[in-house]
Image (cartoon, rainbow, N blue to C red; front, side, top):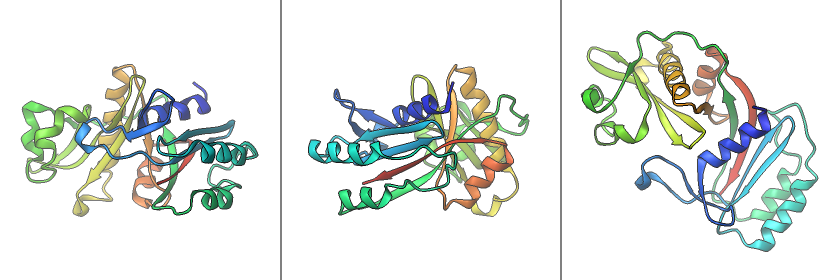
Length: 231
């Protein structure tokens, strides 16, 4: 699968859509966790750009942004912000929130993670004292894997978005257990389990999240795109 197609799958997995193809809500597996989608989402791959508009964006503004983004050059440097960024921001004023970050795919061969344990209904007590939200929700976020110390989950990787062809990783590690490679081990076990469901695992984060990008680096993940969104 080429990077631009994979970036489209990321967009399709990340949000729910109306009949016009406009974004409605974020696509968390648990419906009560969903929130309004951004007004604009763009993803850049080395071969082109994927654009999604929110359902609340006026048609005239969507048309204006289409013109702006139509002049965006293709660049091999995915770390560079869009050339049209000032024009995008000007068109969307006022902006409640702007987010940006890389999207990664997993390499063909995944390292083993023998310490990672699948967290399911029957052993969800592992998360009671450390990730209590999993107690009643673990069935919604599958696959879910944890690194366990002293009988408690200290790092978890779960499916934060689930689509027919892909799943996105969500990772949480207790502060006192960070920097030990636990998040990497839980994440690689999660990715292998997602592949066994015939879905593509992907991993997205924010540019400012140094720890999360460190997990991607340690696992040898490949950055295939970068995305920005505006509420």
